Length: 185
Image (cartoon, rainbow, N blue to C red; front, side, top):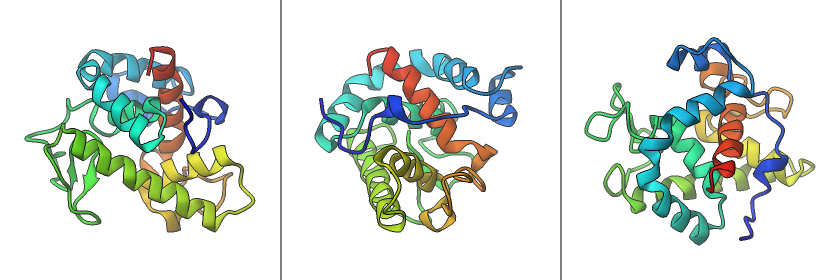
């Protein structure tokens, strides 16, 4: 399957910060931490695998990235109450922010995952416009960072995760995606 936004396996990653790793009381950080975090979410996320794959195919987006974002954003639904994160702004498996978007579908629906994937794709395209000299994979990672913090806050590749949650959002998601790829996503 051709994923038109880049090859997840070619994206560089530093993995997760200590703060992100501590979500699961991990004492490791870097590229090993996201693997463990994703592993902890795998059983919960398996019930969404067919939907993730379907949306990925339809949108030409690597399903491993969708799975990784679901893992990072909602721990495959584990942290949600009636589909919402505790502060009440983020909705669904992929945490569509109601302050910027009107969430559609049920929190764990194909409609929701499609909407969130389209939002990600929009960010990737905006990053490509803002950084025309970046490689496809750099734009992909930039779009992932923008999903968390907004396009205007992506100012350079070297500081891509500055101002993201945990100061590691795109690197963590990429490392989780690489792990999910090894699990058949």
